[in-house]
Length: 139
Image (cartoon, rainbow, N blue to C red; front, top):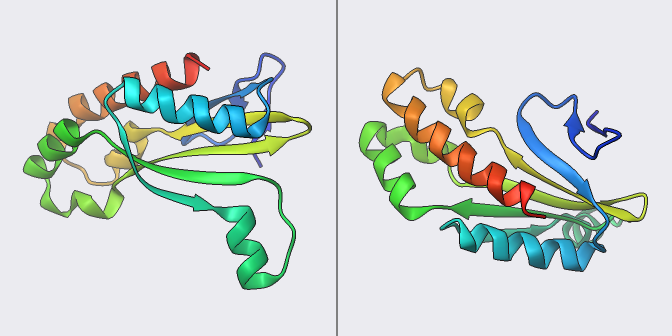
């Protein structure tokens, strides 16, 4: 289970980078969308897990949204290296409520792309991670 550390950094997942903020959920979601846009990402999909779990299972769940983010120039370059990479796109960013605060985390693109085994993707994955880290750090 991923737990928020004392300074807000995520501990334990090993496959993402995130932080806990004092923003209320809706504000954190809005700020995350803005920060993604500032780094050249568009949000291709948005899944409201609270809504979907209520609809499909009849259960109540915390506010939790998955944003499917894509940086078109970097995605294009990655697909040029590895056509099947679309199986791993887009980069997911999550925003959820935890104990009256909001947690925002992004996938570790380098770890995600490492399963492909294509060394040509390493630099691109590093660039994606730099951008996603700036998104998270700006919140």
